[in-house]
Image (cartoon, helix red, strand yellow):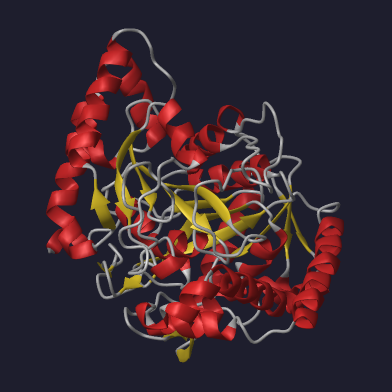
Length: 471
């Protein structure tokens, strides 16, 4: 394994700027890792090897000529395959769109290109992002680099697996009902779902238009902040886009939590959670207390209705997106995806409007809670990492439905469009556990501050994914 391929963005950037290492060296190191390990991990759907090397040479020339663009200049990264890259196939992890080619880039691709990033290729995903695994019947089953028999999570499983195995320095994922945070937790990396509208979704295939987000997946919180700064910004082509001029995060991460109040919702985020996972997350919260934070127990009764509302809204909107193809080409969907889309046709207009009403009431409750606390912390997921191909997972030694429990704790922040970070906070039986840090709308700075300081306690120690190295 190349040391260059393992470096996070914030360590690599000054080395690239100074000429200590070149973008070509770093890109070659990452591509070599892909050549050794991706046949096993199936993190990529498409690799842009020649184009990546050409972009790296261009970045090297610009940097050596004194035209350094910033922290992502010459950094090799990859994007989930539901994000359009001009003149390249974007499959959405599907058969139906297996030869779809966009004539334009997604806005996030243009912004990363302007930052000088090197694009490695497209990452594997659950078909149409409609699942919590990356078991993809068309492009291969993605595996967890920590344990090859375990799921990396989904739907952005390829992004997380590539980062954990040093086959990308940074990545983009999408998150509608947890698809950035679920694989981040299972693969021991950092995943940020921004505030709804902070990052443009133009050029990203929709799942559910009132829930969709695009965000960074990285190996450190500081890297997530760097990526967020690069891809944020108003875009008139996205009707949900927010105009937040001049907002930056990477250069102003806190060094202390004095004056920060962390809320803990015991009767929701720690209810029906695996004991060892809860113990690990509680230890992380105590570490934050030790860094100066006040920790306060709060109550948000409406959280109990979030899963119902999210399910109705997500499935209804998703089925609308796929209505024509579901009618004309049902056989070209995987069984689990087709079933989900068919279920999305069942709720009535009254059900959908009732779910939106629940959403509005819960938003008011949560806004009131954020008058008392700066962030809310708890487990990202309540269950142990599922085995590939299994529909169940372990929770305190019992088999429970995996999909329901994958969504249960990540769902409220999706429903409300709140900025949420999953950051590693420990290990249970050798596999990573994620802490979820939720902030108020437009409160990315707060969640990144808390996540950055949790990370500074080194909750994983020196442990990193190594199972993939044995294949």
